Image (cartoon, rainbow, N blue to C red; front, side, top):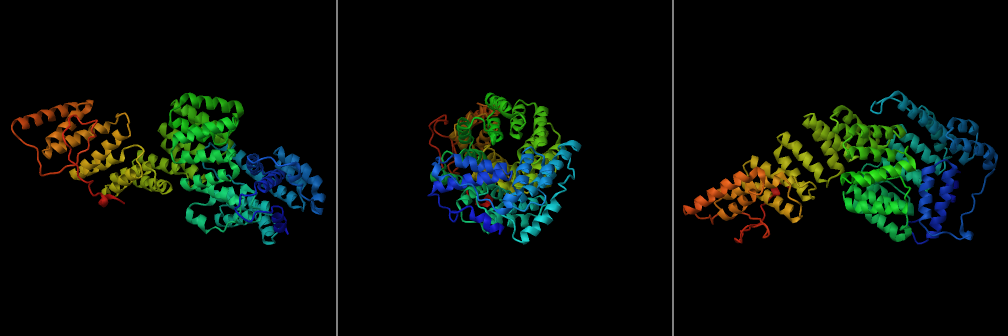
Length: 589
């Protein structure tokens, strides 16, 4: 009976078709109202924001009020009273007056009030009795009872879409992940318009294979779900394609989609693009607080102090007791190197919401800056408990154990970070360094070469690979790596402040000198003279080359060596020898 009632309310959900936007708007307005009636504020807000992005409906097409059943009429007084208590967060009081109610709406509010009462008591106890880094065994005492009661209703097929969602949440809280996924999928089939069930499903899916195994309803809501889960699984290209198709379908004004696109660009470290989208979002929705902590991360990375300061002050004026506001202020103090103050604000954020992932990770970073490794480890572990897909927490743990000189531990954590971000060069370089410390040089070579191949963010992979070849007396391969490194540095027009540029020129000067290629050795030695740390060696090498030339020594023509200097860098116009790049297949993973 419950299932039939739920599906009857949302017609026109049988396909991913976006052709009838008016019908979609009616469905969104309807589910927003139904979510609010049940105290599901976030789902109601999401549907309302999406509906707002579509054109207004004429009066004749506005959704009709839901038809009341006999049970609804009987429970109306109790429901109205209890809902007023619920809105004031008097959950036990609301549940008391809803005992014995039979209608779907009143029953859901009864169970949901009991669940939230347990959660509130658990959070209060956590904040009162423990510091934010204490593990604690505080649990929601209501969960087991709720599971037993909801399980009976589920077996009797008496739960509607909202009831199934609540049952799934209870199962997830009890760490019954497999059962929770099955129930959330069922909830999505019964009531596809309820975003809360899709979002919970997102939090439980760990990889693409798991996603493929799910039997999801063929509805336009599935497109929003797929775009969201692709972003979470770091499948950014697919996510951006989905969001673009949703914009093309008619949701171009949706601030939710714009914010998700900004987050996606943040995840692939396209900082300029992400910043410009966030700035545009702020113009459209100046009092928005969601995702502003992500915006502050971007400003932090770019060291944009005035902008970060303005954002922190602005959010403080809007709502100083929001988790995101505390994280933004924490980032601001961190950028000013006031790490104790920053950690204090991240702790404040966690008192407001102990399951807020970003705050745990950022607090871990602050403890690392303060050299408090044990506190950092605990913070990162909490972040992983909240979300096992948070690569920053895994990477942070790797860094912490590296400081503690425990290479086997940090290898494990860097591997996990790499699995989550296979194309992030920072993870690969960290893995390579780990393998190097463990004397697994073949593995280290593979990591450095792969880091270069995927686009080395910090431009250090080739230098590390070159030094590894130097160590193994593989001078030709080392020279080739230094050549590629110098080409990369100069081709991207960076200011050459890299200490390693002088190292590369010094090695190549010596390499060409050994090969008796005087012109090339001379060019590199002259470049060495431009750097303080290699100036004397460069001058000494130039004197040696001049001396040998005066003695009648000629350049070797037998050995073809790779030469690299772009014309703009070459000090003379000597024709340069070129060979095909060395075969690096032996070190390619």
